[in-house]
Length: 317
Image 1 (tube, rainbow, N blue to C red):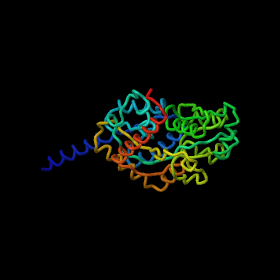
Image 2: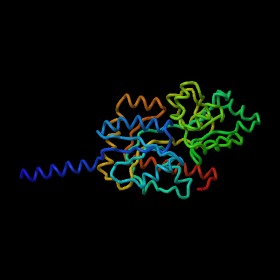
Image 3: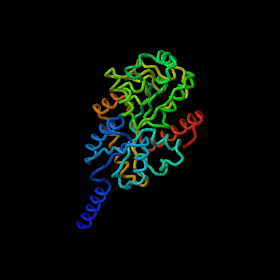
Image 4: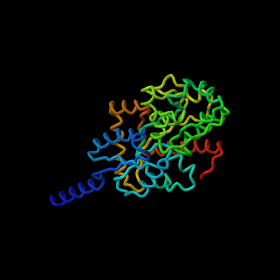
């Protein structure tokens, strides 16, 4: 009997060892220095402590997260590789690309969601406007260079927001795509481009430092960090009520006991007041979503933005 128990105990330890890799690569689809990278490093540090496993942040930047998503599809299904992503890669790219190289519902397993956030319109330090109305007046000076608006990626929510703003204001606004928010912000800070649309987490540190000014945010409720900034709904632009989300994904086929352990660790670390405060300080609304809840969030969000994309007359490229 002792030999049997010893054998079962050994098998149990072996199973646990196999179920949790010694190192986890947490991929981010955008460059270091951007909002998503900062979020990944904050969360990854506590995630590592909760699991007792090394978590390495790996930036696989390019194509709006498409390169990282394709890498996740091809990654080992043992929990050693995860992908921290927001809505653009998971929900938007499959709507705007004929062949993104991955199908989220088939190729990925949602692990857990941890936040939602808002996109917003901000202006560079050299742009004199301090309100959305003043910005429109400034644009109507007929200086074509002023009509450029930076966006972190082509065929993204920020691009469709720029197009919607252009239609509403009857102006020929031109979205200028970048490879992530970090290079876009460099050009904004240098007044190479007068305005940009990106997430509040991307802008927040520069807003706090007085280097850029936020004129409007997406959604129907003002942001806690920016109580004086009106929503697009307040400005009369409707149909942009569904806020983007952040989540962590694993390759499809990753054992359920592994993803469940990761989800439990994420839920645990999100209860830490210090981490919540830091994430909220970046402009996130912290909210734990189970694997099922994240999958449902992705489904409804994709449906919502599919309608917006169709209304804009955009066809998959």
